[in-house]
Image (cartoon, rainbow, N blue to C red; front, side, top):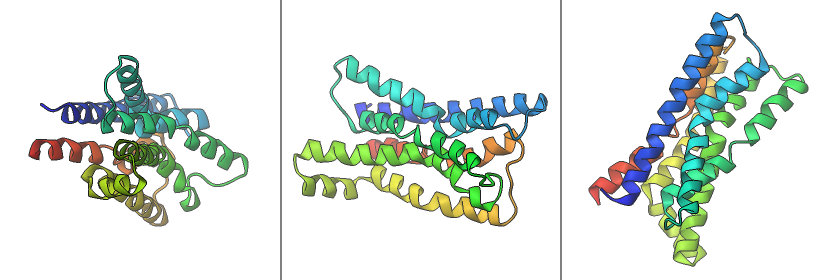
Length: 203
């Protein structure tokens, strides 16, 4: 098994562990009658949308500390860790200024939890390729030829459309389990690593 294939496989495991954690926490909070609570929803969304980012970031840092040679999977994981803080600020800031985070106008909240780390991963992947190729042009050409990076870009662009559509049709995450389900549905971060595994198999 190639190094990249093994590492992308690890990233997929991290993602689904985060999904299960968010569903379990959402069920506990709903059972306790804790609903529409900013802290509770922050925790549920963080696990559903970014739980894997914490573990992926630790994975990438451990590889760096151990002196392991850099890889696309490691750059991807580190980028996700760096991209996970912004939605926390946007979420609490939106509530402070009075935006209805349960209505259509708050559709970007689950998007940021699910995809800000993916955006970070995508940027980190591009930077990794530019450094590896020692040329902006060759790095960009490697990026557009790489199925992992293109899949990542695709989910970044598609997810907000789906979230906005669902909110306009009346979906409102007023329970913690709904918060978890919405964020899980938006979190297609498992697709790029899966493509990475399949791509490495074909190679």
